[in-house]
Length: 368
Ligand SMILES: [Zn+2]
Image: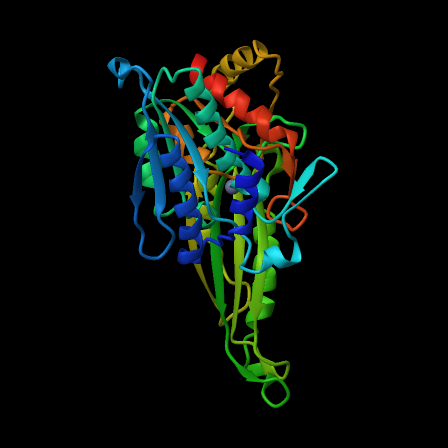
């Protein structure tokens, strides 16, 4: 397999999460590559979002099949970019960097995983490798979470192919994520003729926004961000409704519960207004705990034998690794390409990290 050609094909096949047929086009290419490597491929269909593609690569010696738990590699095929982004920011290689929507997050991860399997097969696969490419990671993994968890439970190690940090560090911790939407109801009235009879929902929401922002606690690594605010219709009407969307990131146990209870107890400041709060905790935190420490140390010593130095880092961003973390299965995240500019048109990877990471993963498959 030519990894650069495959990466170009995958990046140019755009795959926004909400466009099922677009994501399925990537699924077809990926399934095809898996079959070329001799994988047993299963397509798990979805109605609303793209299908998930699962492959099992069996060891060279069938007698050892299933004696050792599999290594699970997690990829996602969807991206945050709408169709047509590729026209604005085409796939291009320049000065050792590869640009294009979804290169880092995570078309490169898929290519690296396939290349690693191919390379591990060349030296004789000693244990089975399971490769799961999902379709809805960027929108919360609602249709893939159960599958990820059940495959992880029967695995010896889970590798998440999200991009590494810019300095090449793996992601050994990630914050948990959740969100709230808050709606304030006031009372509409003519801004000139009947001002006093109105109850301004935007004014009420402004009090709430300040209270909500204050729930951030940097010491506990908890952040709360009112990211979207909408309200009112036209300037000469006292606004009846206002709505905000709030992003929440937590690292420590109990923090989500603290926020949830604070949010559910928000009280209106202005008479005659009311507040509605809905919240969802999407991904639990992935802490740098004892298990993560020992998994990282083991990977580090395996990498050192092929002359690679692994370093540990972390991020407030979540991944499917967050679902695996609470299961207590050894887990390594940030195993994909090295680069930066996540979810922006600046996104790029360092071209040479494709080969390097494929080599690292092949080694982990062999030596774990
Ligand atoms: Zn991703």
